[in-house]
Image (spheres, rainbow, N blue to C red):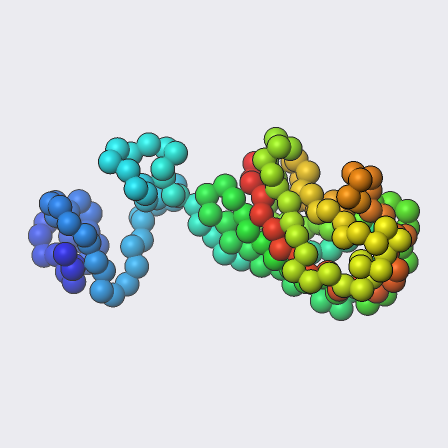
Length: 189
């Protein structure tokens, strides 16, 4: 069923307030489906409305990744800090490029912060990230293994770990100037 305009008392300013359309599909040839208030959504693939099937949160945006204070670097200069995300329900899908053009590394675990939402409180959610591109400074690091990227509970940081579980620290890098290209997924609080 295509809806161009319904001319019944249920329509105000071309908005459908309570249509009785019967069965079948509904097609909007022009425009979007817009809810008049926040906190509403669409029940997907169900015959009865339950909270677990309600899609009521979708967002796209940008964010600015950065090295957390004194975490892997004592000082840092950036060339680019570009991040984007899509949030669907309570899951966030993100990617970023963090270009470090100058700096001084230290013996602390590397942490990149600024994720757009706080992670869930349960550490077993499976939140993490992976390398879109592994730069030479990582590949030729002291450990010679790509660090594992973990988003710990209740924060907005990505922590770097060695494959043995120990911290991957700034001084493990073969160069302080590096390009991080990372993407990942995590569940929000």
